[in-house]
Length: 171
Image 1 (cartoon, helix red, strand yellow):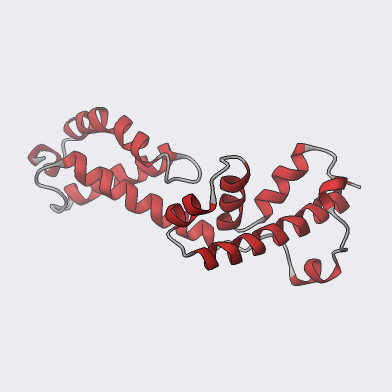
Image 2 (tube, rainbow, N blue to C red; image 1 turned 180 degrees about the horizontal axis):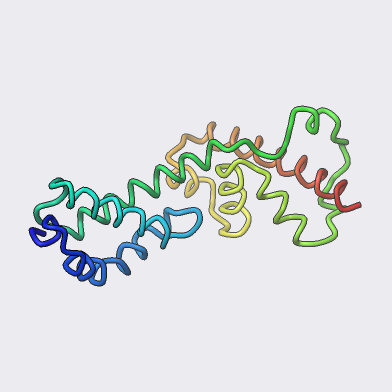
């Protein structure tokens, strides 16, 4: 670490070589996107801290993994705040027919899922593809049964509206 603080890039390169792969593997489940980019950003931030005389004095691996996890969680939270593609106008004008009967391709389903807030899409995926039971969902999401029921209701309605929009766009 002292060599890194002195500005020796080769010393930091060795730390990167030893710990980059593990860091990527540990943050991949958290990251919504490219885990390599998030890990690289974390390594860059730690390098800059070391060059400024700050950062870890020991336990580099734990420090850089923690920095990468913080970045991954921050990125995940920012992405959850992104507004879905569904507007109030879309919700008001959507018809009451069952859009699942009109879905022509799996691409429409994928587009509809991408239009939803991340939390809704995750919940629908856990229910449908992972086939989680309600009690498993309560524990996994850290929510009480009433909150999971309300979230499921909103997610399913949002998904129906998104499917209607994708059907209208493709037709």
